[in-house]
Image (tube, rainbow, N blue to C red):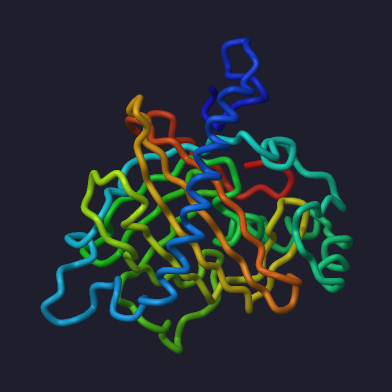
Length: 278
């Protein structure tokens, strides 16, 4: 397997279908279990997560799982849309409104470059889709920082932050509020102890590299889960739910797996690029 999951082989000259099926099975299981725990959360969400109350432990101290370290994208599905530039007009699997189709049909990468909008496909609502390495570390006791080498982006997940201040302006990575959800200590075998992140105040950007839009009123909800396979491989599964009253006819849900790697030796910061996959 190459750094980003490689072409449809396992990187050793053999068919990678077994690896793809294994990762697909892992992500499918995680998504199915996530649907169950989301229903449970809807019943008893009040009073959980965060770290803002007096006497409460910091978010770092209360973390049910360790999300820190370096993770790499494993691309086993939709390879032609993620590892290659998707062709203009390919909107498959995205529930676009007529207004969104009109915007996407007018996509002009040269204009984005001339206008200084090279990072439109690297915003929070799309960055997990871009083949990347992630590095997570605690910025402070109540903020988890995610660095992304593709596009050289940084996200900040604020615990106990509440509503964004009125002074917050839209940005590519928006304003993210994080909570711990579920229960169970580190090292547990269940799906408990998820990281939930809600992001607003995003600049208008692209859900796909070929100009499929999301607007400034879009809302991003993410659920991050980690687990360890019997062979010791450590995985991070990110499930993203984007809602946008202007450009999406219904919520757009995607899931992306990342595999933990020992260090940052392959870290490759790149600038935002309008006509390349990463």
